Image (tube, rainbow, N blue to C red):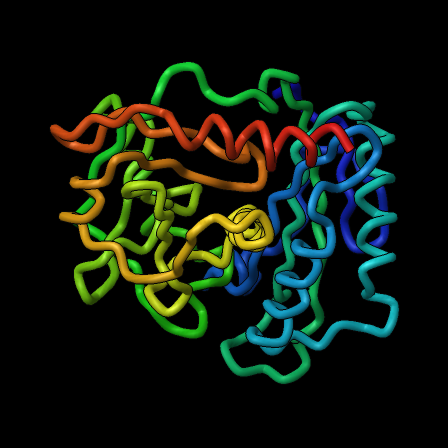
Length: 284
């Protein structure tokens, strides 16, 4: 991704690289905020209603108090400004961060949602299905909680961050985290799906995964196309015994997994899913 020269911060387009927060900022101190990672493709935000639906649910869950102008149209226009200013017209990665400002833990006056929007250019190959399958494993030092906040893309990202560092040390492509009940929650930057005999399964939100936008879009489309798909707990043993495994997120869409520990998989159903569901989305 090429570097971005400009960002949007609380209503202003600013040059990147300048300090924006103070040392007692609540997001810096406590991870008090959340973010959305979106894909800009040929003049629009892919899955925009899904992203903004999740964003406003996160605002409510985290008890932010947005001003009247803080609407989906306002956010969409701000994103378009950043993309245009940075020249990322064709394909870009957008990161929208919302955070609480300075103050103590319970200060009532500090529930305004500060807004930071950044963009980075993406390679067109990003829209293609990965040729080489991913190698993944379990990351056991961290446990992903399963509560009302686990589905939010929180700025408190420590379990995923440490898992991602471990992935690099182990020369893997990703890692999956367990919830307190010993079942799969999700991967460091993606939701997980397993396939057995054509039946597709992904962990339910009650098991602690982030409420992925691509995850929900894929579930909706699979059901409309009459695939058998279920949101149900996935144990490590079921992951190991699956006939096919793939990961999803808003940037890459679908990526097929080649190996989990000693278990290997071939991409079969995933090719059809990419062709029938994702390519039409990317080419709309």
